[in-house]
Length: 385
Image 1 (cartoon, rainbow, N blue to C red):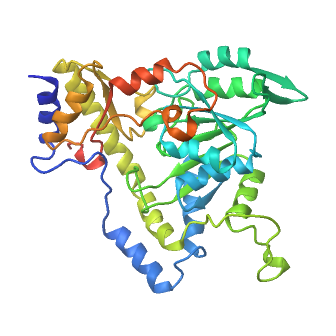
Image 2: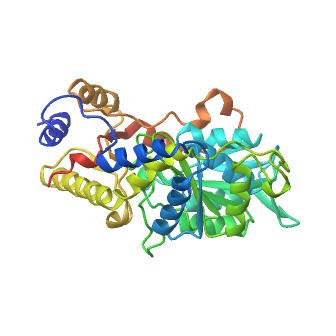
Image 3: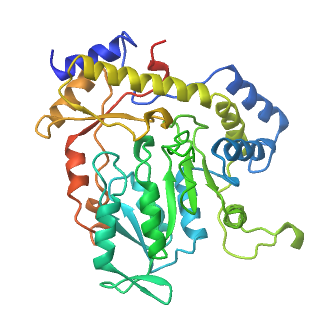
């Protein structure tokens, strides 16, 4: 059997007909009950009990000092960078291998994306390559890191946990601290992923952004969340997310330019219900990963499975394999024709029109991954019990 035939057989054992989506949301009676309760209450906008509940539940699950709910993951990223003091003219280090929202958030701050490469196994920023690159590119002056070539401050770094992978976040944070660079963790895809020391992704850096988009492990249609161990940062972010309004000064007093980024209570109602299903969802997704791993090894699939550093602690948001570059496009096409939704990685950010003049390191690993990685259906309900 060819690789395509083996992949199709694996998924057709789990869903016999129809198109198998890449990542499908799951809803049940508890979701409906929470949404109906919110509608009956009349509190459907940015104030209500479910917003507060969702923040407390996420903080408790991740072990963060607190959480701030936002309208989506992109707004959470923008708010994180803004809160850390990224301003016009600054540079922000980030991988070129990420969804465009990561670099867009930098542009929203009128700052400059500065692209760095990733490691092949985890697809997160490569610490060894980052250290070498910064030794040639960065310099400290009066406690501030500067790009010695562009003369701009390098204010922050965004570490992206691709597909729920742990990555070398601890090593990258240590390097960033050496250069006095703040760290944002893009955890859009890694809710439920812990590091080997049982620290949730997002708590190694200064602040982190989570997404609850419809294709994530749990969803409220949209929605995002900031988490941190720094309560002062969270308080600042919450103030900015609610149009910088000071209620004690009157009904409509705002002390600075803020953002209307608060998650609506109606979305938060759905989110609280989904959070109640998170542990079971994680268990099923881990089962699916181990089932795919078993099939790949026992049936000798002619490909390589991308595996987290600690599979038992990963959320396995999106399963992916690596194939020869000259077969990549044909395999994706054949799988989709067979009703198995398969996708390549995103176009690399540095190749997009708005980013082509941005500074960057050499990016050969990212380019290799773009040509070889295929994303496979990963919905929790596909796991066989």
